[in-house]
View (cartoon, rainbow, N blue to C red):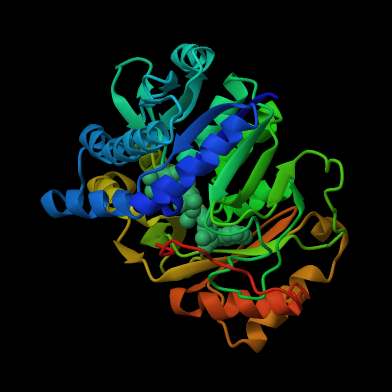
Amino acid sequence: MGLVVQKYGGSSVADAEGIKRVAKRIVDAKKDGHQVVVVVSAMGDTTDELIDLAGQVSPIPAGREFDMLLTAGERISMALLAMAIKNLGHEAQSFTGSQAGVITDSVHNKARIIDVTPGRIRTALDEGNIAIVAGFQGVSQDKKDITTLGRGGSDTTAVALAAALDAEVCEIYTDVDGVFTADPRVVSKARKMEWIPFEDMLELAASGSKVLLHRCVEYARRYNIPIHVRSSFSGLRGTWVSNQPQGDQQVEHAIISGVAHDVSEAKVTVVGVPDKPGEAAAIFRTIADAEINIDMVVQNVSAAATALTDISFTLPKTDGAKAIDALEKAKGAIGFDSLRYDDQIGKISLVGAGMKTNPGVTASFFEALSDAGVNIELISTSEIRISVVTRADDVNEAVRAVHTAFGLDSDTDEAVVYGGTGR
Ligand code: ADP
Ligand code: ASP
Ligand code: MG
């Protein structure tokens, strides 16, 4: 029996009962003869509550202090979980990300893991302990400051530890039974997949399917760590995410893997930009220097009379204030008229490797949206994905329409959501 890494998300440890339930599952894995490393998220919506609190004292909180605050959430759950396990008569020790050897760069709020040195975890395991590690956090290599990995980052902690410890599997326990063809909170007829390749899961995650974080899937693919996404509330087998299906994992040769949606982004429009070389470069250099990742970009055709154009781009809402601030400061140097900020947008994406060879997919996608009366504001595509931006209010209906149009609706089980608030 080898080493397993299990990750429990916030909804799985939302209260004392949840922590005790999870503790039993962990102890069962240990009793089966595994060495067990557990990565745990903050309880329930703790991280959101801490973010709200920070916002009440400062509109743009300092990154270092913000990270220090947010990591407190995972400290609470890791200590409680270790206590609950000990109460069941098994040895457990909790570790912060820093103690577990999670070394990151120094970009606060979305640090990247650059090394994992899990010496203390190995020792704890060798001494017969279950090791509990606080997810979503690390320590920066140069400044030795506490960092966080971005929302949902505990998934990445789990896969990074699984790679560093050469685990046989990384199990991600959550509040749904696996990866579905759409978010079960929106589409009750979504279907659970038995297996999904890394490639498709990467696109779904990048498009907002928060069941797995994009960076976590990237990491798993790079180190070839199979992920088993499953519910901590049921005993059902979940979805395997890996290179190749194994054993009896069923493979469906569907053209489309699923539909993802995302309402966490906002749109910035830079109005009245001179239509000459270097303008877009100046705008996006300003955004990059503020450490902000952008998603879609569109430049309108300039009006001949004015030779001015508008450039729109989307970015995480959480970076909205920072982006506006940075652009305002650079307004004189760049030379635009004004900025518009719209946080009432949503993105819908259709993902599937079969898209490469099926020319009708794009047309069917737009037809489904048009039949649902949904207006499209921006479009972007990759080889295996097509995404559109719409009004946020239209997103749920659009997802259901597209899911049905591509024949993804299940005619048997209704997808179960066991917990969480969907926040
Ligand atoms: P955790 O707290 O366990 O990390 P998250 O809320 O981050 O849980 O992720 C699980 C949630 O992801 C589910 O409750 C579901 O609403 C959402 N989700 C979005 N897309 C999908 C999908 N394609 N399959 C399964 N869940 C999805
Ligand atoms: N607690 C963090 C969050 O809510 C990290 C995680 O849950 O993965 O984003
Ligand atoms: Mg998550």
